[in-house]
Length: 326
Image (cartoon, rainbow, N blue to C red; front, side, top):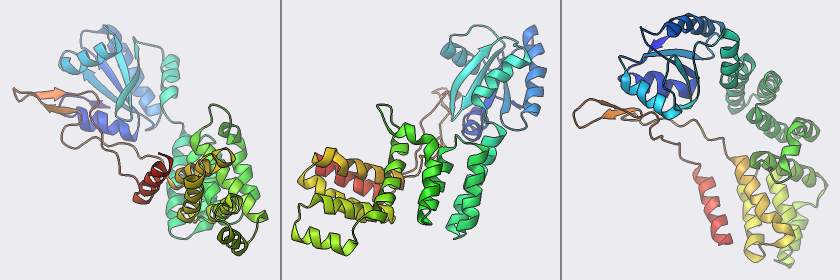
């Protein structure tokens, strides 16, 4: 349990909530319900075994913090608890709720034990793959997905490795539970991209040889079917930039060809190449606390964030697509 002041608001609340959820309990000495709620929250923090951090702020001593949060949520009474995640206040509750109601609240925001273990194993798998230990990476990703079937990034990393190993049937089986999310008006871009990746791999097994396709393209620059087939071969082989170069040739000559399949596949390749955006990190200087003209700390509930720069190759090919389209 951490006591929050203006001085540690950034480090122990905003920054800490980037790593794990932080529940902030706003209380006061004179508040009877606050005294009843406090021990319940402390027991729940122990029960959840590090899956969230409990922080407290004395409303009388830290009026600026309590006042801004109360105004933000339209709350005028205490005890008032606010959940911080990803450097932001995301939810809250008022009053000395019974433990079962607080558990319901926590379970909406706090990762389960399986989710945490899944994330750890995904990171271990990434390290194993970088070291060339594909067997261990596959085993770790399979276990990560078993522990948390909703961990799509573990799913996509596993699909990538399986395709690299030529295991198309296994990759299709791993993709099957999310395949429905790749179609329709609410299709998810990342799911759609990996669906196209698998389709390219399947098509590459049945298509013409690269030399035959190259001859067809040399004979007719507008043989879009041959050019797209060659792009699929490159896509399946992980030769992403070569695949996009072929697709650009189609886009520049006929954007609408075959229901814009070249553009759609190009976008899918960019998505497969991309890593999920890392958690934003507040700037070191004044993300959550700055200085007012009188020199006193100034509170900012959620400050500006720094986002890691994108891959220069991905940026380059995004620009190429934009130029070809517009």
